[in-house]
Amino acid sequence: MIQFLLGDELIRADGLPPETSLLDYLRSHLARTGTKEGCASGDCGACTVVLVEPDGEKLRYRAVNACITLLGAVHGRQVLTVEHLGQAGALHPVQQAMVDCHGSQCGFCTPGIVMSLFAWHHSPPPHDRETTLTALSGNLCRCTGYRPILDAATQIAGQPCTDRFARDAALTLARLRELPATGTLHDSEQNAWLPTSLDELDDLLQRHPQARLIAGGTDLALEATQNLKAFPALIHLDNLGELQHLETHADHLLIGAARPYADCIEALAEFPGVAALMERLGSLQIRQRGTLGGNIANASPIGDMPPVLLALDAKLRLRRAGTVRVVPIDGFFTGYRKTILQPGEYIESVLIPRLKAHQKFRIDKISKRRDDDISAVCMALRLDFDDAGIVTDVRLACGGMAATPLRGARSEAALRGRPFDAAAVSAAQAAIPQDFQPIDDLRASAAYRLKVAQNLLQRALLEWSQNAAEVRHA
Image 1 (tube, rainbow, N blue to C red):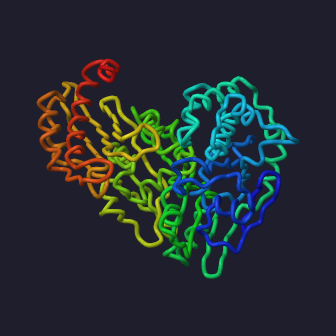
Image 2 (image 1 turned 90 degrees about the horizontal axis):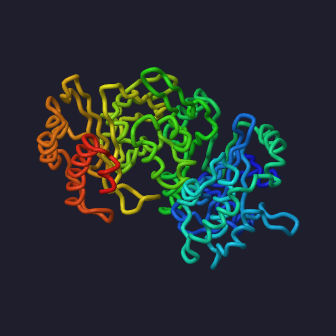
Image 3 (image 1 turned 45 degrees about the vertical axis):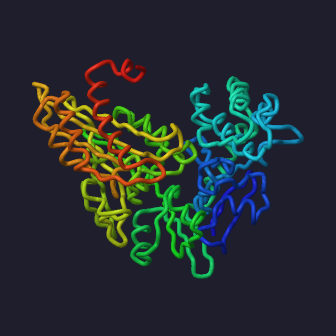
């Protein structure tokens, strides 16, 4: 059984397939149809709800896509839907602002937009246009247009958050802490578990080595919603604090594999361009659920973070039955969606070396739109220089250019041992087609990908040798 608060109501759920989404449970089992289904893949935001969870002595409000949030993930949390906002015949201030500013036409997308703005209103300041755009980056409006929606956000931006949820925060926090830490979902021969310690996780994997691990589920859940697959055995990592910690050491960062992207951005901002990259990784709803370890373990060739980690010489702590081995991420990927992980083994944490004074780093993502889109090419570049300005070592890694995230050995060799100048870049550009043999697909042609990768080397040269702002706005 799993337990959670749906508004103020305690919900106990069991006897459901592990792949049951929160959206299906709300609509089909509880008849809470205010939350809409649009794409069923986490792209349009019509199904946005808010998960509320303890954060120290406060509550944290996370806007998430209910369509790809599996039901087990809400255990021990509060779920708020659009039905919970209004009270005693009055609209919530966010809803009232949408009415006042004419922010809705057909209304299908409106519940999700309202919930995104509600979570934004409950988030720490600033509440300005930039944070509004971030909050709404995962909400597609098909007919209203975004100006009146942004006007609604502006109307509530200056208002203090004094709704009943803020007033009842202490009571909600106490109720959430009373809920049991662990839970299960059972349906016939299908099972889902929610362990609360690594020892418990190790034991489950020893008994069920074929069980699928799910952290954020922003990719795995698509197997259920798009391919209609069932999960006979599923292990949720949401309640494993040991997989969500973050440590800052003198020479490296240690990030738990199940820590959500949204909770990694501040720490990773010390690497040039990485915070900006992560703010383009999916939408805010995706970043509230998706995890660094999940992005690595699913071994997608177009994952945004593996090129960064390859260029930074990151290492992975892999755990199996209590035994940990540390491996470089370079060599972790063995083929399309394949890794060196053994049965029952999982990523415990990621070790990321911090940049030294003699190193330069950059990351570029090229996609058809700025927000919530998949890379056509993602390139990370790290150069080590000696006192004479000679490149002594180099890491050049790309996503979207091969069956796995991949380093360009020949391109690196062309840059090593010489100044980073036009001649060196020209040699590296000539080596790009030898390192990478991309394919044609809906996102880009192979020829386009190769040309873009070559151009990104030229951009690196221009921005590192000239004023970056002038280059980007030329």
